[in-house]
Every structure is written in structure tokens, then in C-alpha cells.
Picture 1 (cartoon, rainbow, N blue to C red):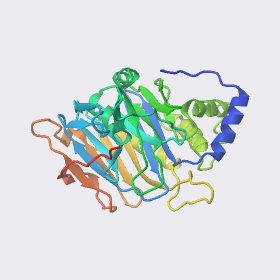
Picture 2 (picture 1 turned 90 degrees about the vertical axis):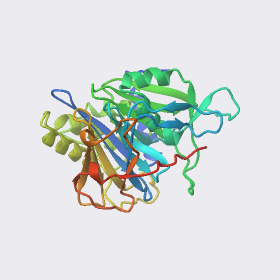
Picture 3 (picture 1 turned 45 degrees about the horizontal axis):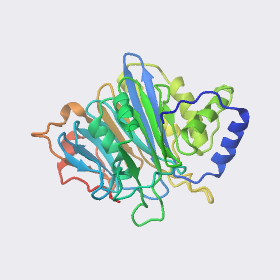
Length: 353
């Protein structure tokens, strides 16, 4: 089930390019920076065709959760606290836990999930909780891959409430060691790509085909030519080139600014809409996870400021830690370190099946 890919033929690449041009999906980009002295930073953009209300949440250890798939569902108690970004307060799209594990959910139109039977033998996990499950339970990518590989449950999906959009996503994981994994459901099978080199990810096509496209572009020097459209394949190539071209430094201020410039370069300008190409979607927000210093950054494109949460200022303990929320869904404006702006709150209610 765990899969590694190497050589790809030119004919396969041409097939991939044709496929990518015709694919219809939402657009996002994720990239991991590896600097000296264990400087690891993960950044992503959230691109979506419609307004996607986001809030930041603080979750302590010891939270009782279940997979929201009825009686036949996986259950767990969170081992680690986390700061996460919600979508419409029904799902977690992104986040980092107190061990520096980062999880990002990106759209993958090619996803095809296993058949789930509510009265069957295999437990379910709602797709709304896929990222949160990883953040709650694992300190490293290796731990996560080992557990997911057992396939003790299946991810279950459905339409986004009130829309005709069937939720189809893949999950990326990174940690402070620089390890990376991409998890996809293809033709009903879980496929895991696990390697520290998997630092860039976008949307369709499936990840092995994204790697093939990038192999093609490696033959064309980035200083000579880089593809410039908003298509997922072009964003992948630009992200892969620039994340290695920016300064390699352990100066946190310079590293954060550099990585933010890369994810902005791969974003879609606000208000962009291309008839016939719903996959070219406005960037709604961006995040960066400083996995060495445990600082989570967030940028709403309609806000004038980048804000951040320093984990040193957060109580994740089971006894005294509380669920807290920082409201961003109305484009509220904050500035700088915002851990003291979170307010006590009831937890978001994850969308079930």
C-alpha cells in the first residue's frame, strides 16, 4: 500500500499535462522549507472558489473525540494539543500540534474513497477530522505513516453542506525533522508517499503524477523559464524552484519572510475567476508553521496583517488547558502575536456523515 515512485516516461508526462489542463478542482499549494540548524517551515495557501470562513482554534490534550460516522466509528483521546485553522467551523483544514507536526488538507478532485458501511466491520473517520486525527495522535510523520498504514479505519466523505461540491482531498504531513508524507485515496485504496524529499504539493493530478511533471521541468533551468499560470502543475513547479532558491538561513525573521514570499508567489490573486476553469480560485488565506520554534502564522488576504501564535504562550495541558477560539470569519483585524486574543469557547462541531 505504501508507494514510492521513480522513473516516469515522457509519454506519461504528456498524458499528465493534458490531464492537468482539463482537471476541475479547487486550488491550493503547500511547500516545506529546510534551512540550516533544523530550521523547518511549512507553508500553504487556501484557494477556494467561494468564501471559506476560517477561525483559529486552540485544542488542549485529553479531548475525547470520535470519527462522526455513526456507531461504527473510530474513537480516541487527544495526546497532543494543537492550534488549527477551521473551515466554516465544521472541519479542520490545517494546523500544528505541540510536537511540531503539521497537517494540511488540499483539494484532490481525483480522490475516490472506499465504500463505507455503517454496520460493517471497518470503522469510519469523517474527512472533516482527518487532519485533526493526525495532530491529536502523532508526534512525527513516521508515527503517523506507521499507524495509517495499518488501515484500521477508512476516511468517509460527503458533500460540503449547502453545496454541490463533493469533498475530495488529500492530506500532507510534515514534522520538525524535515520528514514528509502525502496520503491519498485513489480508486478506493489508500496510497501513502513517504519521503523527506516530498516538500511540494498542489492539487490534481495525483501525487505521483505531480512528481513526474516536476521531473520534466527540472530539465529546464528555473532561471531560464518557469511556468506562470495559476494551474496546479505550474504552481508546483514554481514552488519547487523557489523554495530551494531563497536564502538558506537559520535567521528566523529572514526565513519566515522568504517562505511567505514563495507561498504568495504561488497564490491566486484575489477576485480572479476564469470562465471554464473553476480550479483557478482566489487565495483566501495562507499559513506558515515554524516547526523548530513552534510558532503558527496566519494571513487573511483581506486583512492588512500577518498574525501568529507562539506556542510558549499557550496552555495545552489536560488539567488547565481550555478550548479557545480566535475569530477570523468576518476578517477581523489583529496584529502580531495573538495568543492572548483567543477566548474560551465550546469546541467546533465536526461535520459527520
